[in-house]
Picture 1 (cartoon, helix red, strand yellow):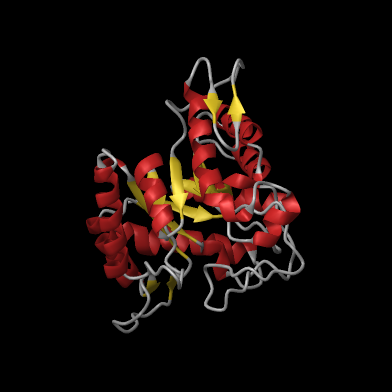
Picture 2 (tube, rainbow, N blue to C red):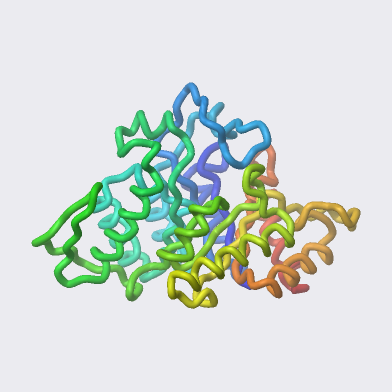
Length: 319
């Protein structure tokens, strides 16, 4: 099992020094990746439902903060040496695809080939309207086309593309990314379109366990969706074993004592959580991403660093 953590993009921990310190500590402890979310802006009034809370309320509404994702990851690249850098996830329709592809390729080159491109379609209609990108209701089709354009730009010596939303020809697109043929694409999302996108276009499926509309928070539910992924990949002529399964948990927490059998996975005593990881690994999950920075309610840096150490010494060491 490989392990990643999400970095804070808002709140008291979201300062250059704090973010760099967390990233460096994660690297020192042997974590495989750090990840950062993506909002270009936060609308003051949001009627759209956020997918990962029961109420549909977006947790970032109150602060209004949102660092630009690719810029922040470039800063993290300079602060670290070997840990991988993940967009978690890039809202693909928000940026001109050639500009986004250039920024991501540059980041992969400057980081020495450490980029992971998590991709998603977005959920906030108000943000789409403020950014002025392609229509919100077409975001799935836009995302699929932009991903195809990204691949053409990154792999072809004479990139040419003709689509509904983007077209280009007779251009140089250099330098190419360090990773060949391109950095891996992970598809965030739990819906059937997200699973189809992962199965047909990308290198990994990256669900979160907290989506009430498309629940994958139990091993049984996740296994069902993984089966759908396999069948869809096979119908598309792909080997499903080549599609990585990355699971992200908002819930991770060591309680100090074992809890009841009906607990949420990745919450409980360290032995229980280590058992959860072994269970998911046996199912075919090969990467676990944890929101460890959320564990410090008041944004205490030393407490957050302690949680990183606790996972490494109390949980990962037992897997």
